Length: 63
Image 1 (cartoon, rainbow, N blue to C red):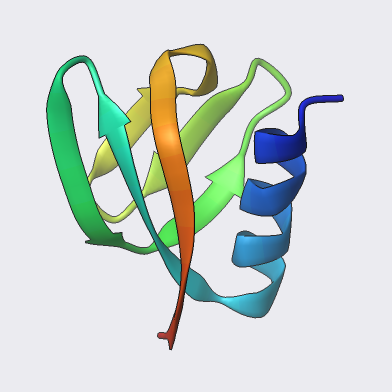
Image 2: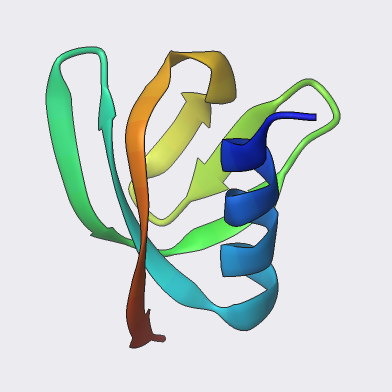
């Protein structure tokens, strides 16, 4: 299992904001909502494929 996948699961459980790059766009202060079995990441800013997410950072701020 990928370490970034585990960090994202923990961020969802703890309700922490995340930042990441996706297809050469930067997303900041994103609320992670859930992860599908097909490795799709649902958030308040859209649905993303987990394999294309780069530079994932779990922030200290909570929502």
